[in-house]
Amino acid sequence: MRTAATALAIVSLGCLLSACRHPTEAAAPRPSPSVISQGPLVPPATFTPELASPTTSPSRSASPSPAGFPEAYVTYCNGRPSGEQVIAVVRRNRSNLPAGNGVTVQRAPVCAGIWQYTVLTVTGSEPLRVITKGDPAALTVVTMGSDPCTVEVRATAPPALLATVDC
Image 1 (cartoon, rainbow, N blue to C red):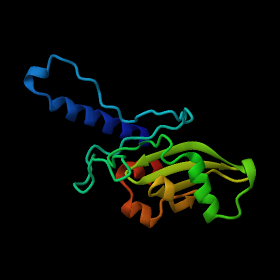
Image 2: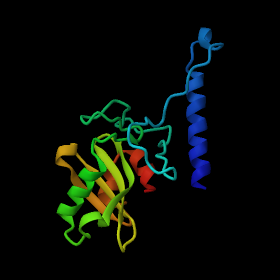
Image 3: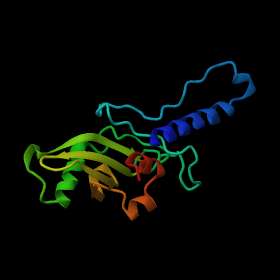
Image 4: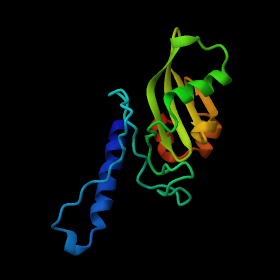
């Protein structure tokens, strides 16, 4: 069901974009916009950030946030923050995590605005889904656990991030 809705959203976006062409441009094909910008981090093949609904609220725009990432879609953070920075802030907030290599990055951080979503592998536990926000040097954990869709996240996170997290 979710896959069909995602496909419909992408097709609708394509239709909207193609309808916006000037009549003289109709014969010339335009490259499709990139939903995800790839960087030096290569996330697991099973993870694909998804585009939010093609209709976003007027308060949410495609302009970059202070962190440099647009809120209209998710993109790989490209080390801003890195997976290690997310692990460090999680360790500061949760002292019962295994030491050493007991916590690793399962899915590299993705960003929308000043928000980040990362999935960590914790030895002897289920994956830890982490939502952070803020500057990479001063990250704040918003929530972490098996279901990160808290009231605060649902009310304030960008719609594109909510779609990626399945909230």
